[in-house]
Image (cartoon, rainbow, N blue to C red; front, side):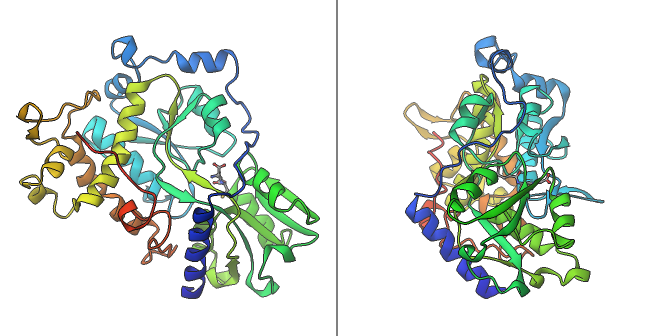
Length: 377
Ligand SMILES: N[C@@H](CCC(=O)N[C@@H](CS)C(=O)NCC(=O)O)C(=O)O
């Protein structure tokens, strides 16, 4: 497990360093916003409409409708106790910011094919479901992507006893995956010169059944998701050790929240909630020390937490103009912690997923990674 973890980390690092991975050309994501649908999405309000946008709607309703996954351990997973995971924590963070209550979330589990339609139709306020930001999704799906929460890439998982160590060995293999994902085109690109049969299913559960029935030689998806699925592999089927994730990462999958196009106020709130978790980590603010930090003399900390701070016009609370109070960041950090806490709690080295963060794109920029928040000021 540790050996694999290390190779995985290296592969990620190389993938990001190259920044040349296959572009995520889009999948079909059926029900894409075109024509009228897209115009409707663009008309959903926002600050230009006098505050009648999604922020006001969510606050009037008193709950946040968050579109999520329910089948990827570590990211979006439903158990008898409810929803949990990295993406779920960002739904909670947003509810804490706009409603003052991280529990005020209505989780809407969506398949890959349903997700953008649900966003366009207003069934959800935000999509936080291991969704890759691509140009066509941003441009043609009526969606606007905020800051990336998790830098991922596509990988391949095989049965450990198959003796396969590289993707190039998958000649004539049947490769299983879910439809309506970036995964489909990435696979076609990577396997362009290798004869193979892609076999698509609507949901992970179906891929898993097919895999267990011996119908798939390999399973391809975002590396983080494969790690989640592997971590939860049934003991009766050999548990996680029965599966091996090959080292090669062959695409860029920046995952993050998406909101409906055309509501810049709502976009800003969601975006800056994500950024607050990143800035908090950089400044050493955590769920453990938040009360002390409210008294901090560090002006950057004071600005992040909406406390009076020195500025161009003397000592004052910075008004970001987001439509929520500047100190909602305190509720966010109390509810879910900073980015590092969210990462370690859900997917880090001490979780079943064992995704090491150090040396990967998911480290802070100060540690050589890609997570970077513009200043709160
Ligand atoms: N990040 C990729 C893939 C995301 C994705 O939806 N992956 C599948 C495969 S693991 C999934 O989550 N399926 C869950 C399900 O069965 O609902 C994308 O945005 O297209």
